[in-house]
Image 1: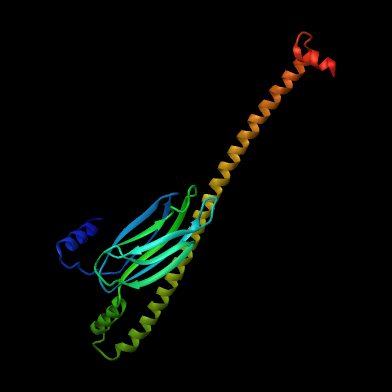
Image 2: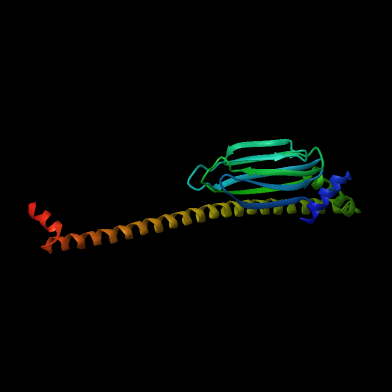
Length: 229
């Protein structure tokens, strides 16, 4: 939060916002209430790459769709999705400032949506520059190049496997949240239906007692009515 406030102050007084030293990557799961818009703000420097993907994992009793918009610091819409359950985008920031991304659930009147999304902001040549600097530092001896190449390939394989593991965990987490929401909804429905059945049983029991008493009571109005039939 302090970093975002500093970026806003720098942009307001006209000073350039410093570039990020390392990539920003986060994943969140949010609840979008019906009739409301949930927005987030992220500082981004010019030439940085914005990668965004989201998925609606639960939509209550309605459709699993939501509207999404991404705006630049001048609040110009850069990307917009209308009533989609999942999407992804990638674009290069043209100016430095606070970018705004919003999930719009005003299309729904009663249904709350659960949205899982990931946001990544990185320099366009961050990884390439990092590899070049590492090679320049370590390749003091030409014999080391072959060793470094093998090590680099091995690290790349580990990185790919870690990314796949993370994607699998995110997928399992998203489905777990959806199943939990469904279980809670079913639990509430069973409780409500059980309450209705309980009240109906009490009403029927009281009605039976009243009818039996009216049959054996000789002074009651209903007893005279039963005698006519």
